[in-house]
Length: 289
Image (tube, rainbow, N blue to C red):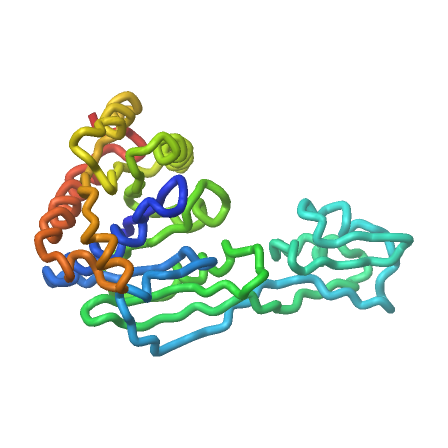
């Protein structure tokens, strides 16, 4: 089973939920793997403290032009949808940072002047944190094309029974790449106007991908029922409400998992897992009643 932990914006507590859920489920004897697919800013390792035993460079194919063979026809530039290759006065110029590695330019070149070469964008790492299998991607500073690295992290072979995918925040290509193909998506939000606005965008994204979903309300306050009202209006279930507790923030600031520093929080995540199991058996793409 693959569960993606996502959010419409950063700072909602997505990594807190993902790492705590991995920890409490591993303690029950379940073979769990945590995948940090927020490759631009991976921070799950700060709380799980894994021992990394393998690090592999990740490359993407980009075009390399043989100037002697090139006839300056410009077909390569016409097919590229990302302006990663241009033909100026019959001379071809490439922009590797914009390339998505589709290979279209090499395919249409009538002179066979274009070949693909690998360009490093980061590393994919695997390791172990006590009872938790661990994987993460680290995008090279300055790189913009993270989906290729996210796919590499997700494709690392595993013997785990459950993959917990810590997705990038937002609703752009990196987030979609991380959650696509998941069995269930938990959307973490905070009960603020900004948080609920971005939750609406994230819900629309997950609906388009036709994946069962539910909401986790972090920093919940009993007197603030805005998240409950929002989820009721959008016909989406709340799988868990985690209280607004300063002690959680203090543990987090020290690199400690709240479920270890504050054992009374473990039942929240065990109940969350029980709710996910119930909701995941519904019809894919349909909101639970």
